[in-house]
Image 1 (tube, one colour):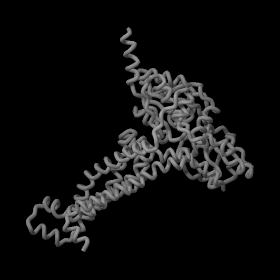
Image 2 (cartoon, helix red, strand yellow):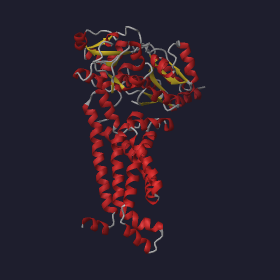
Image 3 (cartoon, helix red, strand yellow):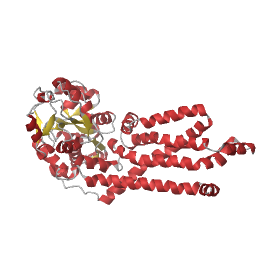
Image 4 (cartoon, one colour):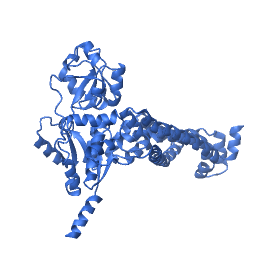
Length: 483
């Protein structure tokens, strides 16, 4: 019995649990609270922050990429399960069909709302959502996710007959847009700390369009066997956070600029975790960013160089190759990152796959251009000497085209350094992590912590490839180029 008692806690601690969170402050805070409560119960917990929107988190939970995340009942019933009339028992039964479960309410509701500056609302005499219908000239700026959600703008517009055409923007940037007068109305979360801070007027939902948005944790059912102590820790949070408490927690992060992990530790009565210094954070993000760029570029070289050679040797097939790689380049980069999630889950792998696709065109096109740009007389001379095609390619054509090819590789590498910052939206880390956090918290220093190293890395990559070009180009070709 004593041996079993000693083994059980060790086995529980060895079961790693991954908590995810959406890309807004409250979700990150709740993720840190869940992670802290789990560690308090002796469970090893990793928190994957700022993984994007609802659908990304839901898919990651279903696929086992994460084990739990904070959600809201209105979103769950309308957007995810598409059963707005389901009662709690029915919701739990539907979740079980997906291999999932949920806790009870954490103690607060965070519903959607529309808001204006109090001065602007008073000036126009607007206090309800219905009154927006007669103000078609108003500029609406709504969060991108809200614009697409089933319980968001499409349904709200129909319910209230609103004539406005809103623009999409980041939720955290909307408050600055309101203050500057760039927009008149935006969507809010009722627990946002910015509502009292900016003295905003919350418009009454007089037709009761928005459903009940009680905060809960969703988790995988198999956690009850894998990590029962963690499930117990999650359920132990039920009813512990009221609206005022959640607003205070949000304010501590967004207005007082405290770390979410410290705020969560204070709430749980734990010692504040040690915080990494700026240099240590930059070093970690640099390593992550180099991994994303290096792996994607290396894979692209293995595929794009042969495709470029094939395009140069077979002109008709070459047009098809160039067209296909060109089409890939026209796809919005964020969309490509999201498209990769069903295939590779979340984290570095989908980011590397997306960056790989974006690297193909510059390398294929420059390889094709370099080979087809070789003077005809040089190719004919090599052929007249009786050199086999493979030897002509390696000994004559590729060296002559090397500078053009390396220019394409350099372009792909520099583009990847910048585009890789989007990988933070799907849990890939890199320099995008502090940039996203800085935007979310309106912290310029945090934004620069990611932006400046990304710019320096782009310059370093460019210089590296220029040095590599000088090193690999035969001396005779360098002399010809100078002449």
